[in-house]
Length: 117
Length: 111
Image (cartoon, each protein chain N blue to C red):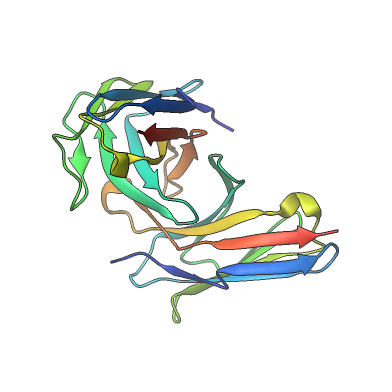
């Protein structure tokens, strides 16, 4: 199957700093990437849909100025958590969309564990 | 919230037994997918079933879909300790290419 990588896998930062997370599709081009957030023992909540060459579409309740998304190429999307606070600590997972004809499978990255002190 | 619900939330069985997880959703769908997540890791796609399909098999996995009841089930037969993970259903409605995930079932298979 298609491979999606995320970097870094873990990051610890001080409150008030910004953190950038990269999501790359390694062996296919992804016009659409998705960013999810997952709290411990909970499900994935979609934060935003990232489209190559255009602005991201954010889900209701997600602050677009706090979670900056850039999809500069068909293989790379970045999520920047600006002015991070302890409540932003979470597991962030990206996925890249692939498939046609109604299949619409998503391939997920391994996730990034963010801890804000 | 459009998020689906899964039950049970947690399931503990002995190796060799079958495990059944159920998923209910709220809106009409294009397809339904099941994913597996090991603790602290990303998701692995297990199986996809289209809205016009009723049952699908893949190895030890069997998925059913009842669109009239807006529900799906995942059966893992002859479970192994390595099947221990969280399992999520996700529905695709076609709009925006988005997946909506269920609440998940934490499966523990004991030796």
